Image 1 (cartoon, one colour):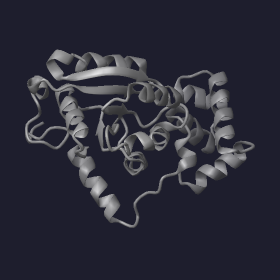
Image 2 (cartoon, rainbow, N blue to C red):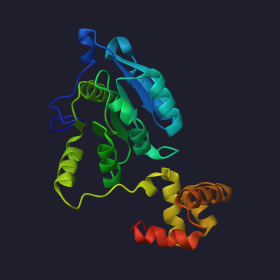
Image 3 (cartoon, rainbow, N blue to C red):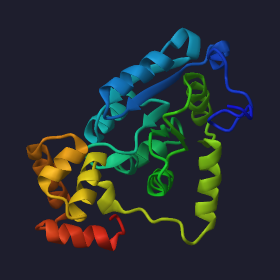
Amino acid sequence: MTDGTDETGRAGGQQGGGEAADGRRVRVVLVDDHRMFRAGVQAEIGRTDETGVDVVGEAGDVDQALTVIGATRPDVVLLDVHLPGGGGVEVLRRSAPLMADPERPVRFLALSVSDAAEDVIGVIRGGARGYVTKTITGDDLVGAIFRVADGDAVFSPRLAGFVLDAFASSDAPPVDEDLDRLTQREREVLRLIARGYAYKEVAKQLFISVKTVESHVSAVLRKLQLSNRHELTRWATARRLV
């Protein structure tokens, strides 16, 4: 970066995995619904002898995450915000006893492509110790992992200012538990359907099949306990999602 400040707000990023110089090891679980992304992160930070990061497990949805986290008791969980089964907030909610363990707390660092207000505030309120975006470099991510393992809060500079402003304001966006039950793709389908798009038009917009659109709509209606697309449209409009 041109100003010499890295993604996590420190002047000058960590170089060459220097956090491992003292022989420390941080045990990490990767939670993301994209297998290729998990493989990329594993390759980038999982060089334990160089980085000090030991990736002890991975998961692609909420239930898998809870199983792996409970079985491995990592130091840090790298957590995506949008996951099948309820999202990152649901993982945090159901992991509250592990986070509160005074002897060996499990700490969470959100790693997401999203910097939307509801996502950032939602996971921080849920108990995550920090939030960085997927534009972060491997070295800076390793540094962020070690800082979170030590109990520090870690944010990219822009998100840090945003979080402080949001929590200082009475207008901080509330957590919408209903919306958080939906996957990112389901939200995309919901918005298009609520705007009046036909299934074929949604399929064309999202490069998926009509059958897949129908499956997503059925899942959205079930999760939100709605009966039809007209109720869905009213629901989305009331939340200003369209």
